Image (cartoon, one colour):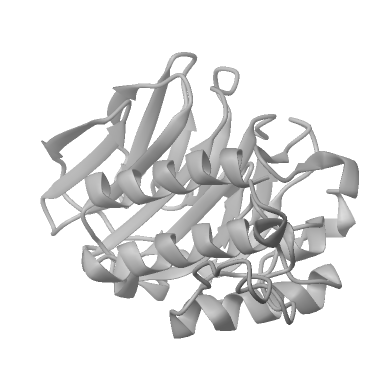
Length: 273
């Protein structure tokens, strides 16, 4: 990697040194807005190589028609610091509840690691912010969590249990979208997502395969979606100890395309840093 690629993307010579050639810089307006907010939180701009990886990610999501369906999201890999990682790509900034995550929990290449006991993020987005029949949740983790933990989601228990969550079952991930019936896929790390396309149709994707099933929507809940655990009727529970590099919440989209772009971004960050 050249010296210029290691410079902050907003350095005067980030485009290349005079007389020594040039290199591309991020161009997308939403990418530049995100990088600018991240730079404030980090205290410095990320390297050109990282900034270009973000630019390719955002541009790819837009070109494939996925971007507008993402309503709340954090890219938890690439930023220089934990504060930078918690700057939202889209939507409301998550709350690091009780300042549970500390700098040592964050790795630029791999993401943010939960302790499986107390640390979690409140996404700030309520489950009912999106239509109960038009909704997705998704994440990218370095590894599978232990059985019986919630990667992300929320649920209500009264009058019946109605979850919207991605939940681990030791070697599988169980996707629920406003219904108590899960759609299960084998899982050992990487991208996983679940969504409801309409009143009758849900999908869960993991391991590069999407499973579609018919489960009737049975209402939703008004609780905020938590990440690294689930919001269980207003109380955090089922904590995960996984390392998470990305999450998103919003309306339904093409899970395979989101998978491709997120997975490509994580691979690019592995090279850029």
